Image 1 (cartoon, rainbow, N blue to C red):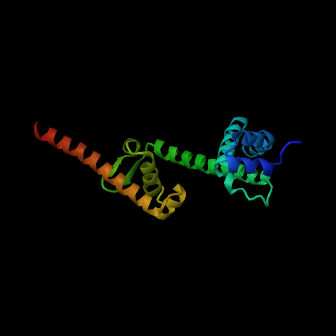
Image 2 (tube, one colour):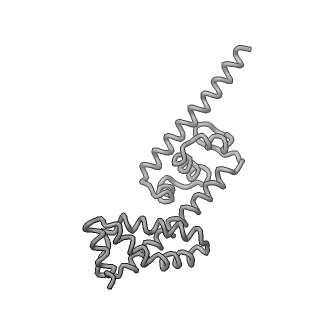
Image 3 (spheres, rainbow, N blue to C red):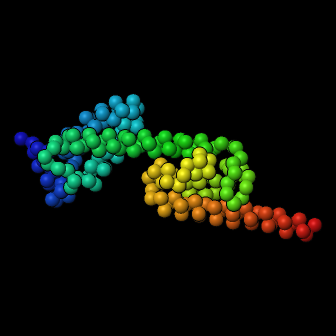
Length: 183
């Protein structure tokens, strides 16, 4: 007779028993993958999300409350994994569209600049905050909610982005001025 889910979970928690966890994966993989295929309608994406689901389950297995069924707990992790990936994909798509847009936008400090060129030089997290605030007009608080980071982090990203743009822009203008003055 094979051990119950609860017995396997207890072995994983107490002994970090990878074989017990492997048995849980084997027992529930088809159900989790089927649920994710239903949500995504994409076999490859469902496989990736199932892998992420089981990784998260391994990392959080000590939080499983044996009053509920392990399968339900696992399906909740799968659903949350799907939701997080879906939100991230949508956020990344909006950001890519904004960065790829060849439009000229007004950024503080520099005035009008080629947004694609100037934003491409910024680190991703700084660029994300700058695009949300200056291209899409979100407040710092709204950007912190979108990025799921503290408000102070967004403010730091904006400050760093402004400083980096100012530094690059001023260096370029001062180089142009010095070259012009030598003529």
